[in-house]
Length: 467
Ligand code: 6PG
Image (cartoon, rainbow, N blue to C red; front, side):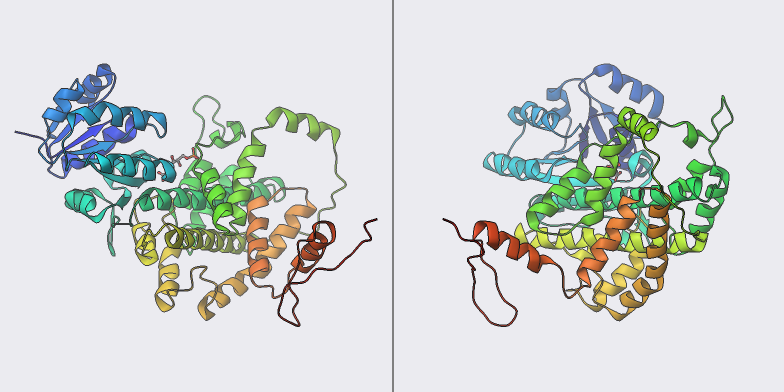
């Protein structure tokens, strides 16, 4: 009996995905570079599931039904290339490799091209939902050729999270579309996480609320329009007590945020494609600056800024500000995917993306239904802003968001993501921006030319005498 599918890489995500597939009735051959981990996995976690442990690449490949379908759950970057190199001599034309890691989309495009020459099919598949999602139903974002997708469509639909709108998996598009969409998913994730963290900061520092009180508020918010996975885990985190000290654990965690790169890549490609992803960038920088703990400690002793707290904010105003930040974070992300889809010919269906983000993934939220309704009304409205319902939504929350930003400033609290969301919005809804002055400056020192609002053409002025 040959296995229906194979999986390489038995870190927690790989183990859980293998178990998920097996629990849907498929037989899964597994392989890990270090044999001990495979043994331990089988001993500790495999019960009646049809999981076949293998201890060499040859045995692994041999144990698979043809055309072979192989999921890689290894660390993004060089390990993926190394594994492909190891596999390649044992594969045959028509076999399929699926990379389920957070690979950079350009790597995925390169791998597709290289493997095409060998007749090997390749899917770059975003997998979201962390360890829990991998086991109980992730959101899956596969991209590559349709032919490759069709080979595993049934398995993927079976293992994906389910919502009332169907399984959270769809064929995302050509080439690296799957990994691109997952990368932007993470850019949105960064922006929403940072926005929640900033609201938390205002609550604890300015409103002097305890972690438990903030937990109660977050729990309440999670029942309304902010209902989302990130809100849910945030209230659970607030209520979590450290066993040894009985203090809320969150208060004992060092404030240095790590990152694996997907938020940074989203920001980089937003710059390349010319999408103003203000709050994605701000959220990456917020993580970067958090890392300078020693410098911050030193400088915080030197400075005592003459901030004069200006009034206060209501919890309801914080809720509205955060709600607007959610909306605008999705707006930047969907716009970015739209531009990439045009530039890279991905053929992404944005409505489908919003649908498969509804379950399993880290950025699942109630708001996605509202966003889908906006996009359904007008498929060109990729920022969501160009709509009467959206205008009402934004304008109802905007005064609170402005008040929260101003208030935080007046207390000396940094709220980079919330501010960046507002700047993104204000920039987009301003007919006039001061770019006229930028153009004049460029023309002044570099003869870069400018256009005029009162007549067509390209102009240059001799702003200075050169002799
Ligand atoms: C997911 C997550 C996941 C990601 C982590 C860590 O959708 O399940 O996005 O894929 O690896 O969130 O990312 P950072 O280390 O960059 O925070």
